[in-house]
Image (cartoon, rainbow, N blue to C red; front, side):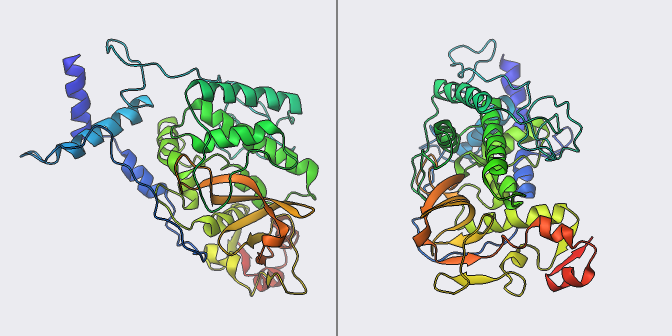
Length: 402
């Protein structure tokens, strides 16, 4: 046991021969977006920070900062075993508690619509090309409402058994548990994932359920084809600043460096004003992935030479599924207009585990609160692909083929 601890400390301190090819901090730096974010007007309080628990009062010694060393050791332990030393059970180390039950994830969650790449977390059997985060890509048949409800309830129960609480923190948008047109379990599961500070197979299973159900729901309830921004955004549901590093660690250990997490949309811990970038990124990335170049990278989504922008008093002002909208302080993407209510998806929304720990979630706003609309809806990937062999049309819209 003594030698195990010595070896563990040695691994933390290693910087030369025998050290891992890529440590977690380097991994986080390389996978976080380096893009600048569009700042929306309106002040917000500074993010709430926290110091490592139990390290108060330690002072530096001849060998350096002991507090920093212990923090690194605690972090390495969590990265290696999936939880901190006070939350897991390891043979021959008494006095530790065992985490709550996990949800088995060997069976893939159904993809939402035929023709979409599979992204399940289990072993897939479909024939699709599969570009998602799962180990078994492929196109499979949609699940039924009952199947989704049963799978979601299993994850909800497992999360509650682990002590996970729904996110309640304030943010740039209200976190609602009941969402128009969506079943009650959807909002409950979304709240729990956004409130989670850790990430295991249980949380990843829940994220997949939200993603797949939302995509299937969109195929059944929105104009078709579904605007490409929405399935892209749905991959990130439940991700939050407070679980960003935990998801990165989970993906690092699973060999999935691009697993969806808020940090890839600009929302790492302490992030600020990343709602605009999140909507632009979800809009632009599928276009680039389909083989097109965009002029100005993510700034292309703001360029009024290609994309019309209107204030709420303009005669051409309208709100459609896939549009980028702002209420003056928060940027969102429209999912569905429901009378005087609008179902939206956004980054840097509320409902994290602490105040202003931004989340990615579906929520509702009033139609009357929308001040600005950028017309992403008309310039969808389906429309762009229909003009793929027309260089003049592409050039006029700031696009070209790779």
